[in-house]
Length: 594
Ligand code: GLN
Image (tube, rainbow, N blue to C red; front, side):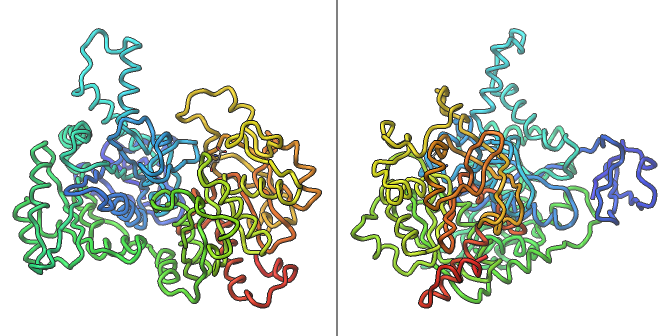
C-alpha cells in the first residue's frame, strides 16, 4: 500500500490501480498485486507519524505496544517502521552494562541500539538501522559538532530551537526516505522526566508544523487496581495526561495498561478527564505472552482509531494468518524441553532478551514449550556441575565480556561435551567451547582467551588484529552483519541448508587460526568461516549429537515469521535428547537431530 498525496498527480499512478480520493491530503491506492507499486523511480511520498509516549511509571511496555500497533498496520498493507528516542546522554547503549540497560541490540549496519529495536524486528520481520535509535547523547554530539564547525554562524546554540530542530530532523528522517507510509516513534522515559522534555517539545512543534492528519500521539499509562478497595484507579492517568498537556502535547489515544478489564464507566471517566473520545481509550490487559498483544490491540481497534485520526478511511482487512499460526503453536505445545542458560547476568532477564525470544520462536516451530533454567556461571564448580545441570535437555552458554564466571562456563561446556548433551555456544560461549577443548582434549592446560589472560601460553582465542590499535570503547567492536561460508556436510550445513549466510556480530576476540590444525585433527572443526578475513565463525564437534559454537549472534535475526535456524535445530536436538534420554546412541542420534 502506498499513501499518495495531492502533490503526486493521480495520472502518474500505474494504470489499473483504482484510486479513491478521501480527503484533501490523502488518496489511498489499493494494492491489488503483491508487488510494490511505485509512482516514479524516486517516489516522493511523505509518511505519517505516530508518537508513543509513556506516563505514570516506566516498564509499561511502550515498545510492545508500539511494535503491536506497527504489526497491525503492516498486516493491513502499510509500509511501517518504528524508531526509538532514548533520553540518556550515552551516545548509544553499547557502553552500558547489561545490568543497567538490558541487552545491547545490534542491527545489520552495526549500530549498537536499545533492546526495543529487537522487538520491532521480531514483530515486523524487517530490519532496523542506526537511524532507528537516537539518544540525547547522539543529538547533542551532532549539534556540538556543527557548532565546532561554525555552522551556526555566531548564534547562541540553545535547547530550543537547535536541539529540538535536530530531534525533529531525526524524527522525520525515515519518513522522508520514501520507504515508509507510517513511522512510529517511541519516546523512551516517562512524561515528567527532565531528560524527556526536549523530545516532548519536538513532538509539540511537529503537531503544529505537520498537517493535522499526519500526526497521532498515543499515550500509554497505568490504571492500578487497588485490591483492598477492589477498584481500578484513574487518577494517575489523569495526572499523567495533565502533565503531558502542560507541555503542549495533547494525546489523541490513551492506552491503559491494566490487570482488570476497564468497564464503560471507567473509560468514560478517562475520556472526560483526559479530553479524548471514549473510543480512544484503549484497554491493554496483561497478556500471557507479548505475541498476543497485537491481537488484543486489534480487538480494541487501536490501529483503526489511529488510521482514522491519520485521515486513512479505507484500508484492507489485516492479514495475520502466519501470526495466528505461530501463536497457536506457542500456546498449545505438545511437549516440553528444559534448556540451561549459562550466563553471568541471569538476575536480569532483559540482559538476554533476544536469546529468550529466539527460544520462544524456535519452541513454536518445534511445537514444544522451552523452559529456560538460568544457571549462574559464577557458582558452577567441578564438584557441583552434575547437580547444577541435572535434568537439562540442552545447554546454551551465553555471550559476555570479562573474567567473572568464566571457569564455570568452561566446566559446563565440558559436561555437555562429555555427556553428549546438546550444546550451543554464542560468541563468548563459542570461545569457551574452544578453550575447554584446548585444555581438556588437546592437553593445553593453560589455554585461554587473551581477554581474560593476556599472558596465556596458549592464546587459542586472541584479539582480532584490527582491534589491537583501537583505544576508544564506544562503537569500536566488530559490529553488524558479515558473511560466513559454510562447509558442506557439516552440522552447520544441515542447520542452514546453504553454504553462504550472513549473521550479526559484536566482539573483539576471535579463534586463533594458528591452532586450527591441532583442533581439527582432534575432532573440533571450523565449519563456518569468513572467507575474506579467514575468521572462524562456527566451530563444531562432528562426533557429538549437537555441539556447535558460533562467533556471531543468531539471536539478533530471529523473528516470529523467520526463527533463527540454529535455534530451531538446537531445540529440535533438545527435543530428541529429551525423548531419547534413556536409550542413547550418539551415531544414530546425529542424523535424527536435524
Ligand atoms: N568478550 C568476547 C569478545 O569480545 C565475546 C563477546 C560477546 O560474547 N558478545 O570477543
